[in-house]
Image (tube, rainbow, N blue to C red):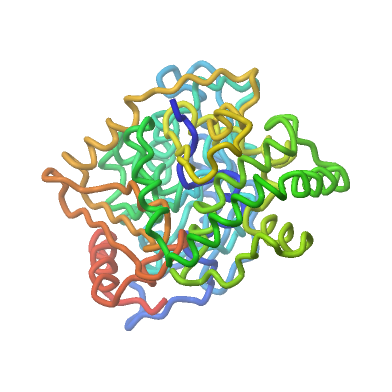
Length: 460
């Protein structure tokens, strides 16, 4: 069973993937007319209304641009929504307030809030000129119950977190709600809608892979065999063979010396050689997640390149620190989810036959401490797939043309209503509505604004 994660590589998420919904931009949106009652409540009144929500705690108010207020919040959630009396934890939130009469956007990146500043606005927030509540996923960052019961980390429990939060804040924000997220956050957005389809008026999921059969990764293999130019693919193949062949000892030694010099360890994955093999196997997938242009391969080193240059390029593309114990520990929850419900991809690499020393290295057990049980639930993703195809409504999926995440995308079906899938040309994992072709961009924007019940075009 290849319960290895899909394209959301938790090792990349702390840098590459988290911003995939939209880069922070705080230019105040301009509209053709003044907002109806864009009334800003008295300072104490707004803070008091938020603090009065049962279970909500206002931690502090952050600096915000003109026209906005920003709050760090914590909301108490049950560890088990089926048995709410059996323990609780505080879920960390970030609120960007525009006006109580503007739409509210629920944003999740699927991980923690560490890399999101208090002034961050996701693309849907800017399009509808709305408020935004950013949610730290359960079991990430500080949003973890102590002691940690890993059996309560699943897609339904996380959906329950979003459901309770929306119900609580609708007492303050009564206009339309939109949900959104990118990569793993986009997946979480869809899972929430499956279990609570009427919580929001519409959802936008960016670069969200959908692994319905974790035993079959041939779609990813086929995608990587045709994405980009033949020259790029050949250059990557040659580099992989060199790094696991003639230059393996050299590269493993460099990796080990770097780790020792930085005080890093590889106890979870096992050794520098195991890390090298794992990252070389994943190189084509990670490379194309970052590439906008299909023929942009001029910087791939030749197999005979200087050792310093070869190692520096590889470390930069792969983001080697993410495989160290120090960086793996905070994202254990992500690998746990991949190993129990979401699934991932184990790439077939026939061109590396005879060079691989570590069978099963791509499986999720590689990343998760042995003290945490992993039992894969093969029915979880097919259930999501059936719901999207048979009942999903007001859904918008955006993918990048060169992104391996689209090898197995979410697809609509006969029962889907007002649901759309768009492909952004010449785009990587950082896909957005803004990168769509003009006609698709207009249609996607119109759908989002219709769901949010805003009729004045916004320049964003």
